[in-house]
Image 1 (cartoon, rainbow, N blue to C red):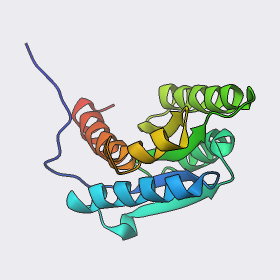
Image 2 (cartoon, helix red, strand yellow):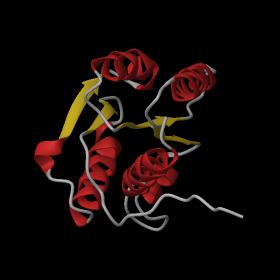
Image 3 (cartoon, rainbow, N blue to C red):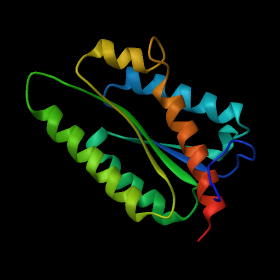
Image 4 (cartoon, helix red, strand yellow):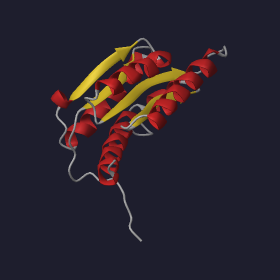
Length: 155
């Protein structure tokens, strides 16, 4: 049996982060985590482009545009959609997730979903660098692993 798995031995390439400004106090922490993870694996800040969009709903548009440039090894989405008292959460979170999933399935590069979808602000804070770790760092690690996997599989 031949086993293929991504690794973190030779991390390289150009990466894009699409970040939602809505709930920026959470998104800022996710970005910090992603940049730290990239840095720890040899990806310099010069090899990361940060693209701001108003919120999670607008992310698929920006991701599609970035994919089409052909400049990136992977694109990461970072943001936070926090449930409120209306069904708005369901629409925004659902459309963001399905849009990113569709682009990931159709793209030749990995698209990583790092958008928090939480019931409370406290849950978002926990996932942005406190009790539950930093999901931005997790997204960067996923991007690195998937880029490595893609290079091993080839075209």
